[in-house]
Amino acid sequence: MADDAGTSLKGRVSAEEWQARVDCAALYRLVALHGWDDMIFTHISMRVPGPDHHFLINPYGLFFEEITASSLVKVDLDGNIVSPTPYYINPAGFTIHSAIHAAREDALCVIHLHTDAGVGVSAQKEGLLPLTQNALLMIPNLAYHGYEGVALNLDERERLVKDIGDKKLMLLRNHGTLAVGASAAEAFVGIFFLERACAQQVAALSVGRENVLIAPEAAQEETRNGPARGMGMVSGLAWPGLKRKLDRQLPGYDS
View (spheres, rainbow, N blue to C red):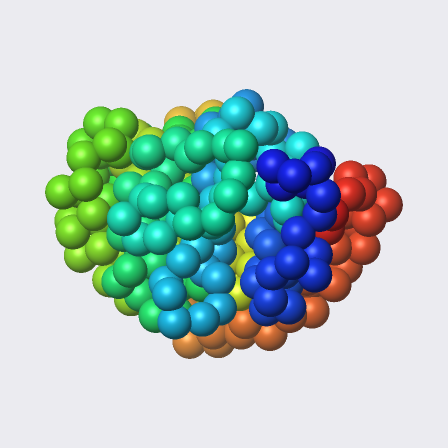
């Protein structure tokens, strides 16, 4: 799949933009490979390097397993499509992603999902509980944003930005999960562990809230002050292997 002229954009955009496109398309394919996609819905966005504050987002109507580097749509912070494409974008996706890209210089990549486990935990009053090692790793960097309906109201952007603050993970109440990263690798590893923590919580709570073990406070403190700070290193180690896995199982994202 390519652009509206039927050819790849490789060599027709800057090397920096092409790399951002390849990494963003890889994220879409990885989400599909992990079974986290929601048909044609939810979004992943990647900032295009440069002074224009443009970012890449999925063409509305394509499944995540179909998305390629060339098919991604480039938009500005007002939602205007700024390069030729036969596609258009989902306005709800623009609202959430543009808010974070505009407010956070470190937000090169934003991933938003609607998985069963993520939505399930987002709808639980206590949110993510310190039940598992994955949860303990995520909780120090986790924010919450209350549900306001389908994200079509641009006024919501200010409240969403205030709620996430400087954290890199968020549970959108009654809605889903979100991860922010300074790279595709960091965002993916963040959403991976958040999704794992949510799935593990749903599994644990199947026996009832009164029958689960909250991690000891000393263990929670140890995790907050140690491994939780090393996620950047982990993402750098995992990313090359993730792309090799894509090359084996769902190739073509880099076209």
